[in-house]
Length: 289
Image (cartoon, rainbow, N blue to C red; front, top):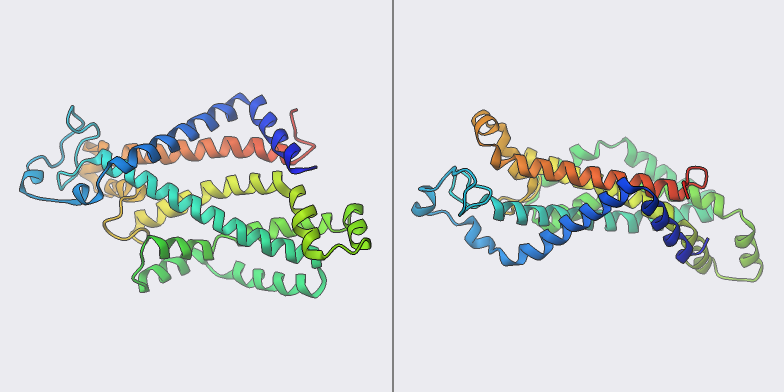
């Protein structure tokens, strides 16, 4: 299957599943809205706190503040938009970075096999035994982190599952006739891997990356909720949701945390529905078209 036909097959699968199609539309609409709106919000003005702001603290949604204000009198809507952009940026960056590393390692391990595969798998087995969430918390705790370093730390622990999946699929592909024919013709291995094997894995890679996106979004939000995510002063959906840890805010000031929680739920549901359609496209036995 060439790359073009793989993309067409994935689109047909999504188009035939109306739930996945609506989910894709909602996902794209939310992402575009956040990225178009965010540049018009000044972070310094948003984080500023003065006497005038304190007079308007904990205001419910109104004509001036569509999503109300927090305990410092700051606009919750601005924090919501910038927080969503930060969460999306990290989720996208971690997903892409982890996918690049995982795909490369999986291709090398599956194609060459033998001692190369054994060495890489022993490394992956060792990493799998390490509680990566605890390690991430330790790294974040002992290091004066920024958004970039936090993202790099997440990438460091996010590629193993992708590598294992790509390795298994590549092992099967490496024994097929088209690979044997290319080797017989003297085509360099690196060319066979990236020009012939990789295009045949497009649907599987896209399906895996889609599900990893939801996972990474949840991990970032959870770590920030616990206080181990983005540095103080960087808006995040997890930080907005963390307001719910206060009983009074949880029961009486839902405008502070509920929109962020709902957005995370909606985004994960959308990604899940689209991911299921892409997963069917990658498996000939499950395709509906």
